[in-house]
Image 1 (cartoon, rainbow, N blue to C red):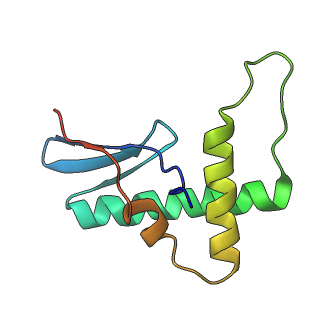
Image 2 (cartoon, rainbow, N blue to C red; image 1 turned 120 degrees about the horizontal axis):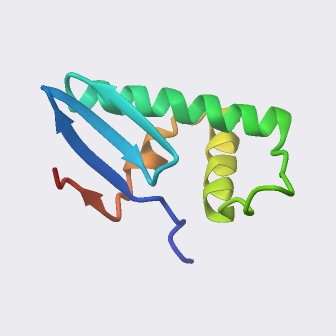
Length: 101
């Protein structure tokens, strides 16, 4: 069975703060990497649970959404709704972590 697709993570630091960005989808900030990860997870949970409850309205005036990212968010929502901690899905199989400054 193929591994599930996980967006890439980008880690940057500016003025003593860390920022973790998940494939341009969401970011988390903090004074430590742990705080940035916690912030990112909170934002992803909000997005994923909103997507599950409200659906995703598609505009005819904008380009189509990235279906891989929508599928990833939907999967996060499914896992969270089932009581699973999504951290393992987001960070467990990090395929690429870009730490360039």
